[in-house]
Image 1 (cartoon, rainbow, N blue to C red):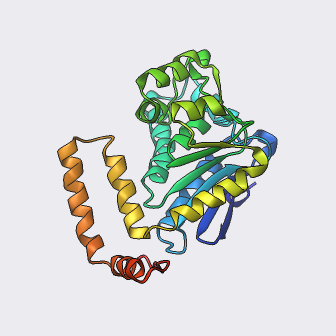
Image 2 (image 1 turned 90 degrees about the horizontal axis):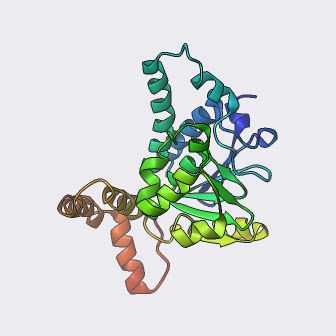
Image 3 (image 1 turned 45 degrees about the vertical axis):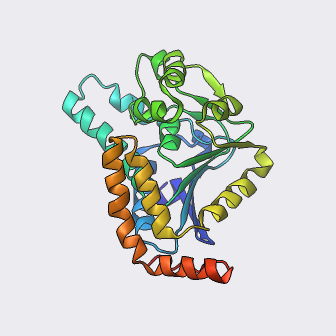
Length: 265
């Protein structure tokens, strides 16, 4: 099975859908999956036709997390510590680049989301879950900790107390529990998941693509900097937006009471 098999790409109407495609392995994420995801994100970055990226899973599972072959490799006592850290940082960098994509990324969580898969959806901007989905961060029960960003992103999204409850207990959380804590934006019946994601993608495309990208960057910067530095970034990012074709089109459409025709320029 090659990279194109383990991650399916489908592009239509400005939406690039990336589907984890190892249903017989519960969509466990192998090295091939990570490399395919990284390549897809790289391609999406330079493709103006892509306005929104959706990440989902094939079959009844979203993903069971890291593939067992990777777990065995990382457990090898002969693997030097520096080599171990290099491998982990490579995997982390894939989710980092997904998070830094200047286009909205929506996780369509169609089923159980376990371990490293939680790290994946945390790197997305918005999360829509089927009622049947659940979330599980089990690492402490295996004598480990999450290592693909969950200890850093989860507290920023749901708060320190909720993050500690989820990570330190290693227990299962329902989709509705995750919605209540702010991890999930919406919970819908499984049969309505595709429509809910399509509606969200359409709504995200109503704004100018340059503006959406800059707004996403500014919001993410709030996690890692002080208020004044964040405001400085707003001013820095806003200047070229005011001079863009999209801004002129947006104002003209507002005055003429019509839908804008965005070009991303």
